[in-house]
Amino acid sequence: MSTAEGIIDLRSDTVTRPSDAMRAAMASAPVGDDVYGEDPTVNRLEALTAERLGTEAALFVPTGTQSNLLALITHCQRGDEYIVGEDAHTYKYEGGGAAVLGSIQPQTVAHEPDGSLSLERIASAIKADDFHFARSRLLCLENTIAGKVLPQAYIADAAALARSRGLLFHLDGARIFNAAVKLGIDVRDIACQFDSVSVCLSKGLGAPVGSVLCGEGDFIEAARRWRKMLGGGMRQAGIVAAAGIVALEQNVARLAEDHANARRLAELLLGTPGITLSMDEVQTNMVFVQVAAGQSDALSRHMEERGILISGRGRFRLVTHLDVDAADMDRVAGGFQAFFRA
Ligand SMILES: *Cc1c(COP(=O)(O)O)cnc(C)c1O
Image (cartoon, rainbow, N blue to C red; front, side, top):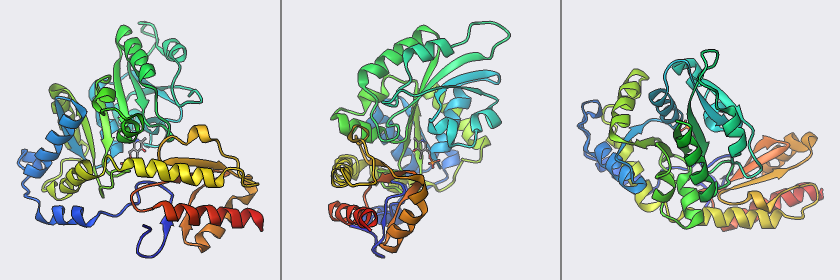
């Protein structure tokens, strides 16, 4: 179902509005001062997330950006470097926080077509122990990445490489549940490969705000200190954590619907003259369509006039989520087809 205004917003899975169940849970959440560790709802969310991911501990944070930053500055020291994909959110879309605030140098690696970083490229990016070089300290992956799921065997190989070379291993798992649902596996089977995992509650899981950083107890306690320093120590945060609990309890399995809707949309668009689209990329809740760059503005305007919001230039990313359904996909495909027929 599209929003009350009849708008179909495919710009991101961050645009969902909290459900009635979430709002009710928020209104009735028992709260306390979480900086004192006294918010029972935050404590419940952290325990629940740790349990779901199979980690010792977890920390509720305002955003995924802060969660990744906490992981990097907790794992790395000033003058260390982390190895990361050149299109990774952590590197590209988080304001360079690890470098700016953590004095951690990013060493980027080009992605393979499936979103992974080749083990050869990672290995050759790891620097020798030589005082000319920054110290290679951590490897960071993202799963899902651009809607694609990293193969489990690949993650195991990357983990073995990281371990053998003395690197810590962090996952930007903003959409780790999309990956687990797509593979039909327990999310723990992904999380267990890493030293730390960041999970977004505010993407496909539909919570209004919040992410959770997961890892070992000592790591989480160290991250808690950095969270306070970065201004992420929130007080009666149970008000928002309550929505996160509903997200984890009610909105994980249904991610399969988002994946089915994305597939439906892609199939409807396939073969439309003027649109290039690869079904190989349609694995979870994202569809990427390529149109002639010069048509981008006109296309966006045409769609907006039909109450459909999309984002991109040349290459458009269409993201499905809780607030769109199968009938909306028909409307979106119709909008595209009308544009390219005209
Ligand atoms: C959204 C997102 C984040 C963090 O986003 P915030 O907007 O800061 O919550 C991190 N990584 C990926 C892959 C994301 O999609």
